[in-house]
Amino acid sequence: MQAWKDYMTENKDRFLDELLDLLKIPSISADSKYKGDVAKCAEAVKQSLLDAGCDSAEICPTDGHPIVYGEKIVDPALPTVLVYGHYDVQPPDPLDLWESGPFEPVIKDGNIYARGSADDKGQFFMHVKAFEVMAKTNSLACNVKMMIEGEEEVGSDNLGIFLENNVDKLKADIVLVSDTAMISMEHPSIETGLRGLSYVEVEVTGPNRDLHSGVYGGAVGNPINVLCDMIASLHDENNHITIPGFYDKVIELTEEQRNAINDKPFDLDEYKKDLDIADVRGEKGYSTTERTGTRPTLDVNGIWGGYTGEGAKTVLPSKAYAKISMRLVPDQTSDEITEMFTKHFESIAPASVKVKVTPHHGGEPVVTPTDSIAYQAAAKAVATAFGKDPIPTRGGGSIPIVALFEKTLGLKTVLMGFGLDSDAIHSPNEKYGVENYFKGIETIPYFHKYFAEMSK
Ligand code: BES
Ligand code: MN
Ligand code: MN
Image (cartoon, rainbow, N blue to C red; front, side):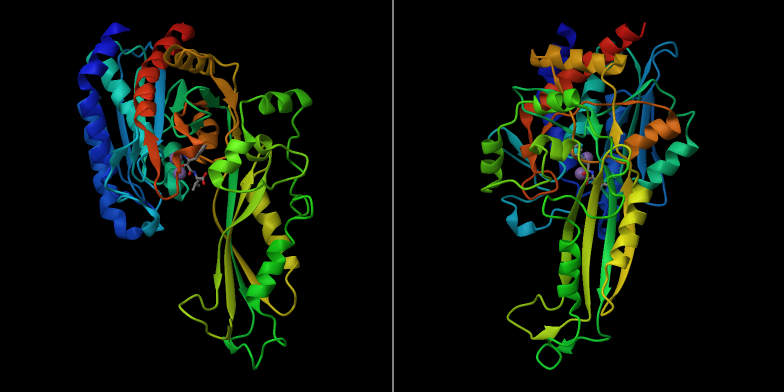
């Protein structure tokens, strides 16, 4: 499509500048200090939708951060694509590890460095710009609805409610999401699965006050020691999770499915080198690709207690804490796993301590079909833009709302992401390739074109 190419070439610099402007807004959903910035970002997204050619765009307030919604209905007879993305970002901590400010985007060696560059501002904004390309060249093949939320990184609770209250408004034929990664620019791929999530916080209480670790040490249960023992017992020597019933609902893949998953280009040495680790570690009997894409996990995300300040303080603390995430696969469910964890954790606590388990957010795992028109359209769009057929893969991350698109709206999702695992999302120095950004903008209009053609 020459008109698309011409429009993109003419507006390339502006497309990049506009993304950089968006990246300057610290829309950190987890930290209430940034509520005003999150709102400001929503305003900027709304304006970008109007400028790009939406007939209408609005800020939908929620009990948390607002949802931005815009649409352009070209012809009710055409198929409708519902684009989903999130404009909120993870906190940038630890700040001192950033080489440039997390909200002062810089372009270096072909990458845009900023919090949210890949997750997900750089990716959802490709849809805004691709929509602009189609709208301004009068070539929209589908109706477009865009729903960009501000609470993905904190669990999307309010978006779940929004879906329930807006089933009609959100009527569509497919949900299109760019919030995942590809293998590489040389090996484009499309994720066909996301893991679910159970996230809990545990509190272990020993004595009713902090104690002198000499006077009482050795005689009283130290909650940090006990917590470490309890956490260590959650995996056996094969790195299987020991919670009774944990694997009951896990669907074991067939040999054929496993082979297909292991067939994806993956270089273990590169992987280790990139992370500066001498070896990987995971569940016995499964490859690294399977471990992240198809197996459930349990990981401590944070652990604290006692004295962590400068120097040494001899103290036997009263309390110890940990935040624990469990990644889930079909057909595990977040509520069941959270309950199993809670029961088990309480049952393994020695009498010398008390434990409290507080559930945080959760989400259900999903597998998206590859035999659908929408997947075929995405595969053809990627093939057109990259000159190579994409490989279907299973991603390890979670996007909790995707399961609800199906449950509440009856809609399937296509995960056409353009990030790379090396983008360091959620880490210091998050980046997104300038080339990935423009390749995405180039690919998306083809999706709309092929999806409309194939839906006929
Ligand atoms: N975009 C990610 C999820 C993702 C990343 C999927 C890479 C596949 C590949 C998303 O923003 C995210 O970080 N989700 C959270 C879940 C949420 C409830 C905090 C996650 O996976 O930890
Ligand atoms: Mn994301
Ligand atoms: Mn994220």
